[in-house]
Image 1 (tube, rainbow, N blue to C red):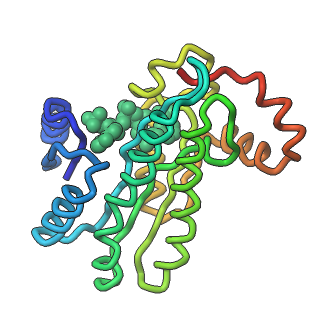
Image 2: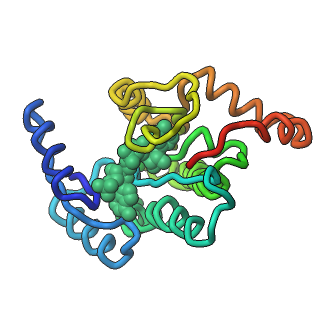
Length: 222
Ligand SMILES: NC(=O)c1ccc[n+]([C@@H]2O[C@H](COP(=O)([O-])OP(=O)(O)OC[C@H]3O[C@@H](n4cnc5c(N)ncnc54)[C@H](OP(=O)(O)O)[C@@H]3O)[C@@H](O)[C@H]2O)c1
């Protein structure tokens, strides 16, 4: 089961899956629509109980064009945070009751240290990571797994607009393989590529006065 807002893109993904022998059904839906998401998720789970739900939908924006507007901050939070809640919250009581299943949440390496170039994006991804880490602990006793995915730069529509160098930029297929392996192993945190992940953890661990000076000069997301 695939979701997104663009029916034509969903149909193309359905065809690509079919060509590789996988059955996929796309449904056009906006993750910010809580009532529609609840109805869709519960109806789908009634038809065939979810083994795995991946809350992947996200948008990005930054301060490349000036200060982050309230509208931008709200849009980032609506999709990246409320969208995750709308995707997983209706399912959690069902997974708990069944005592099996898995949840994967799409965060980012940008979740480890807020950067001036993308305040709302970093904050939204930090929410996802911390929520997922806590949820993993909470659901462990019920037999439900939770993985938090923290990629660095991956080639996609999101990064195609970036006009600055993206260290260790990775192809989507390679990223997907790493994510699939991590989910199959029920890893709590799937962070990659390793040098970027190490750099992100280091930035989070260093004194803020020192990292402020280093990060001030980073390019800003458009
Ligand atoms: N690319 C990177 O370097 C990178 C790094 C770290 C984390 N991430 C995260 O990875 C996830 C996927 O991003 P991507 O890089 O693949 O970018 P992308 O090509 O722009 O994909 C974004 C996905 O989110 C969906 N989406 C966006 N808004 C939505 C909404 N309101 N309702 C339903 N679906 C919505 C899009 O589908 P439609 O547009 O068809 O609705 C699309 O499937 C995001 O959460 C992103 O933050 C990406």
